[in-house]
Image (cartoon, rainbow, N blue to C red; front, side, top):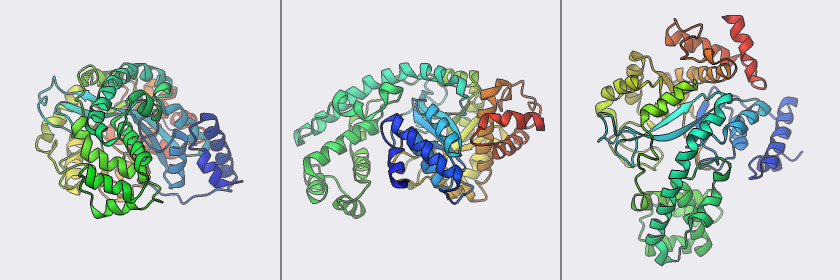
Amino acid sequence: MDIQKLERDINNRDTAVRMAATEKLGSLIRRGALGRTVTEEVNNHVHTTYSFSPYEPAAAAYAAWKAGLGIVGSIDHDSIGAAAEMLAAGRTLGIATTVGFELRVSFLDTPLANRKINNPDSEGIVYLCIHGVAKQHLPAVASFLKPLQEVRNKRNKAQVEALQALVGRYGFDLDFERDVLPLSRYSEGGSVTERHILYAMAVQSIQMFGKGEKLVRFLTSSLGLGLPSKLQSLLLDEGNPHYAYDLLGIYKSNFLPRFFIQPGRDECMDVRKVVDFSNSIGAIAAYAYLGDIAESVTGDKKAEQFEDSFLVELMDLLVDIGFPAVTYMPPRNTTEQMLRLQALAKERGLMEISGVDINSSRQSMNCPELLEPNARHLIDSAWALVAHEKLCSVDAKLGLFHPDNPLAGKSLQTRLEHYARLGRSMDCSNPYSIIEKFQEKA
């Protein structure tokens, strides 16, 4: 069997093609004909084509399996569209899965309304993640997000027009419906982001100038962009497999602030409404900690101050709003930042969730930082999250934070430890049978 062809097919735009490839790869894995080196690493925050990513949901699950991860989680901006395929692919390939979504919410009616909190583009607008969505609630989440997608697309269209006004004189002809929308999964419940817009610009650039010296000359001479030598080398390499993504990154740094239109309240719902919805379906709403940036690890954020100077006030506000968790990315924060956040979360009974957002072909699925002593407990939290999601997909009262959970009288740490053990002992090919293990150990 041609493994390379199957690995291409699992990322095919046609759902039937990629699911057939998933079945064949899963069969090879079950027979022991396809193996991997297993690590303790996990990643709960992998974007798919349902927001912006080089990975179809099944391909994301397979890439995580191949990288040795124990858990892979799909998270998309304003969309839960990837979830069903991610869950199915995980069962077929034999990797634990968790699903959720990410969105921007309004803090404009809180004491932090005029602060830049965790969003580099906006004051009073915050990114949060909803983790551990039970499978029976996927349709409700899709309905909840649909109006936001529609409002966002009106802004997206205006942003494309604003960008075209900036670059039209250089030969670009960017149209939202023709060039941007087809890059997305909007017709299947996906969202459209600023990255789609910039990717469309990157594609047109390559069409106009090709790859290599002519394009680099256009960027530096015509557009007047200062390119570091490393980026110049990457763009001079016509065989660079990440070419369009590298070009997208350059355009994001130089053009996003110039065409970005601030989202309004109709697109960014009040944080309390979103957290209340999450709690009502037994999911886990997590504030996404960013932290002050001295030097961006990923290269896509400038040095800037965010929530560190008012973190205590923010954490108290999160508890008041009803957040059960915080989430953060160990590769992006210093040890000092993480230790402080961890102490504040523990004092307030907030669950800690990790995840490194994957949205580029250059990124690795691996996160060895999780193996460091100050982050290793996040692996247990991830397994607890998986157990939570599978259990409350069978019985809502078994959600980690449900008031009628049989373990509700225990400390959060005790519950997390118990759920982590259940998650680790789960049969990934039959994950909902975990209910039997819960009943055995109850």
